[in-house]
Length: 114
Image 1 (tube, one colour):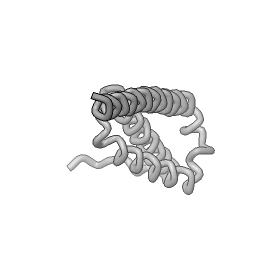
Image 2: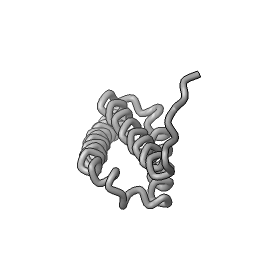
Image 3: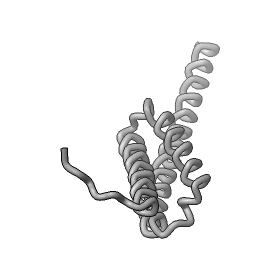
Image 4: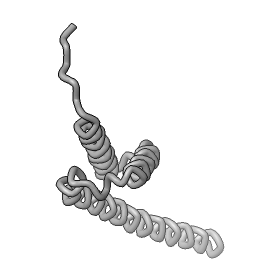
């Protein structure tokens, strides 16, 4: 067994902080990947996990730490990309839905007036 040097609480806390930030980044990257691929099956679950992680980080005041400050621009970018991707897909879905409804109305009109 290899003896590991003892770490102070501050070093351990910094390591835990970095792991939480890494996990948030990983979840956001995975959500973005799924959203871009149109695979929404796991997207909601990943969003819930990311939200829980952010709540945990906020409770621990990690979002005010130097460790977070260095990663904030990247995390902000990922959140914005995810939001924009989902908003664009929502707009596309709304347009498709309007077209389908219009088509259904047209078919119904033809059925009434053969």
